[in-house]
Length: 120
Length: 109
Image 1 (cartoon, each protein chain N blue to C red):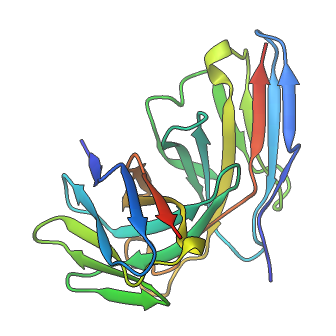
Image 2: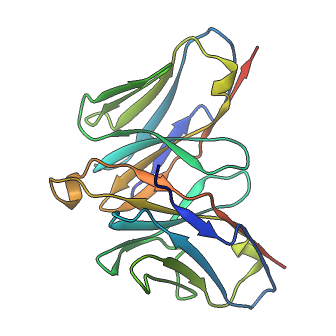
Image 3: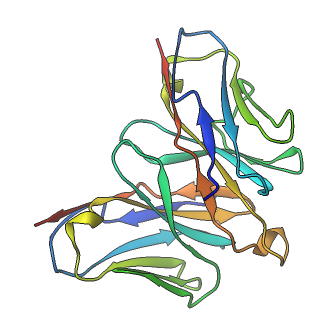
């Protein structure tokens, strides 16, 4: 069964450093997402991406964050200058559109296993 | 602003009992999701609900959606220990997805 993969599984970095989290979505999916989850808390939406551009982003997704789909298979999240509060589990997800158009598609999001980011 | 309220946040129940988790949301939505998360793991999709009156069932779990009341429920029938996990509802509006705080379900043998 196809699945979303993420690398690395755990990333440790110093405050102020740049990190890139990588995701390989399911191959025929067209919608891509990043979420984060601070330990023991709820899942927070960061950004959605479709047709090579950001569809929506949350208040968390400020200028320190960026996303890219550089080669048609990878989907990356970059944090330019990490802060202590960026420590969390980061999940990538992807979705295949239905036939009725974007707003009415019926398919679910498939989540990757996550990258645990620890900022020291 | 889209807000999602889930309750209860913690539920401890005996095997064999029935219970319902509630998910209220504040504005119209395109779709509503239910997910399961085991400790230290990723999210597993359970249901996607689109339209008013939608009902989906998988095993001992049944989800429903009332778009007029902006309410979804996840009903657990004859709970078994394997269903112990955290359950999240999430509401998708224009590809912005807001999660509830989750319901930590603990089923006692």
